[in-house]
Length: 323
Ligand code: FAD
Image 1 (cartoon, rainbow, N blue to C red):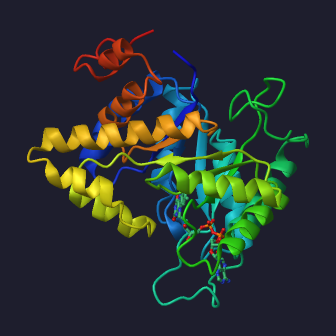
Image 2 (spheres, protein in one colour):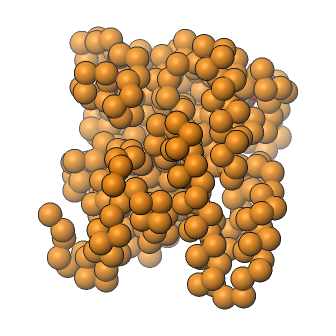
Image 3 (cartoon, rainbow, N blue to C red):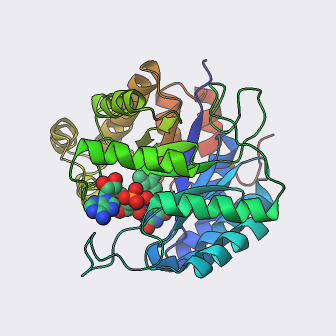
């Protein structure tokens, strides 16, 4: 079985029940051997405490997993964001995904709230805070041996940014999106993770354009396994992606939830395979705080062993953790 780096995105728990179930789900995801696990952050800092809770769960109970904290800057002051970065560093996080955050209702791209106006500016600020705290060391350019390792196999501090296979919804042109990626690179970002998308060609087009323009960091494709029609509608609403008519038709043709789940897992696994075969550096799975579906996608794509998958989803997994 080939080694394909994969990573997972988690959210702060949105209900007491999920908060209770999350440690068990995280334990199963962590035991699959991800390259890193990232935790989202509410725009405006609304979820700071809850994001930190999930990150601390990872740091305290799964120290073998590298953590990546999403941070947003929309509506924040430089001083407030500075303090937030320090708080996360104090908690033991050292990799970040710096995103601007969506504009609150009523604001336009021209009238931006807060001191920091873009993901690139947030990258610069995170660099500055890290620089104050630790002796500066060069962050080597990305190697090919893994996303969080440099060319010599040493761990590197990751400051990731967002990329969009089909363009950011408010972008005026493809060129503007590529310019934004170049600005993020100039600010010191060393990895990009894409918004979810459904067709491999969209990713390869972005990759070709970015490389031709001089973007050097790895661009990790983000995949959300979608196993119901309402979930598909929600994912399109959140991402602004165009409707994937092939997936919608395949889900619609199934009459049972098991059948739809199979369709969604198979679709995501085939997409992951195509991406990796075409040169993607790995895959980033949007888990929606679930474990069975993302693990099933990895097993279907043969990125994890089928036996290991059965162990990870077994009901008694938590009672008898695997080595
Ligand atoms: P930027 O790169 O700063 O800008 C995005 C785009 O907007 C640019 O490409 C440009 O085309 C356009 N643009 C920017 N400024 C202007 C302007 N003045 N006029 C016209 N167009 C302009 N959101 C959260 O709230 N929390 C999260 O944890 C989170 N995690 C994410 C993880 C990933 C992998 C991705 C892809 C997105 C995530 N988001 C998250 C969503 C993100 O905050 C939004 O997509 C946001 O609208 C853009 O953030 P950015 O960092 O890409 O912004």
